[in-house]
Length: 351
Length: 76
Image 1 (spheres, rainbow over the protein chains, first blue to last red):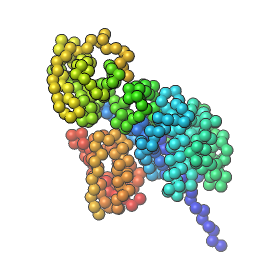
Image 2: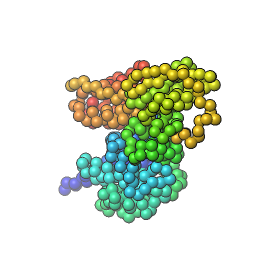
Image 3: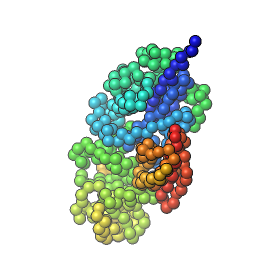
Image 4: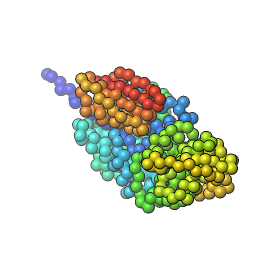
């Protein structure tokens, strides 16, 4: 009698680059399931190499942790650009924001929904996430985890291996594709069970981002987005906006324009790539940063901007500093200004 | 087998990886794709992506802030 070999089931794992999704994917692979990874790029991911812009950070390893996790697991990783679609999640989250500008519950629902669409299009059977009950205050609670399963449309195709034993059995468990007993019962904010499991699986050097994997959970970054929207009079952003919010010193001396001042060489180089999109100021008599001007400015505004830019140059204590103002079309003019004294630099201008 | 180029300058990682991934998906096994980037992170990320997905990095270089990586499409 020929014994029929069971079809190998296929799952896609949401891979953030952190430890939990690494372990969740591994736990399912251990049960003989074919796993591939999926990673969604929203533009706000800390996983991007924005930190590498700053020269002082250049010596640090620049690995992308999602790719590193996939390589450790020996699985494929599909990185999906969701920048455009994600805007609606950031701008209009139906479940609101967390402590800062983080729409965590809507975000997780969105990503699981995208993964659900992906498995339907690619012939996969179910979805894995590294969520743990009680791990995060907004999206990983006993009452919100079913919301993600329901609103994403994934329903019982969504498996959270690290806390599965606290949740109702999913379809893969009911069908015997996964042995529920070999899944886990982690809960709460403690990381000890994950670290023990990582050791058991032989994983070392995994990423442990203290503030999560998203800039939207950062208070300072969220303040800059709020300022951007207030100044525009509408809640809107482009990728260039959110990249620039990660770079430089942001100063808004008037409601209608903001200065983005490079803090060091790496940032100046990065900002110089935007000189066709923004007017800019560069000190010429003294070494100094590149300053971009976001907004339409009058001659009086340019004078004020130049005084502030000069304050951040090597000529900050000089009587006069010469600066070159260049508009978006590349037309330049030279100005001589007195650097603004620190006492006049209103703290409220700092974004 | 054909040779293609991809301009990923001024993009921050992982965008050069995503653009590489999407372009490679359109190519045939054995085709080569030359990707030009300005984010030095691509020097790590594109080879990592290739290792994971069964493609080969034929060459990579960094000169004057430009990173050029040539990928040969595998059959994975």
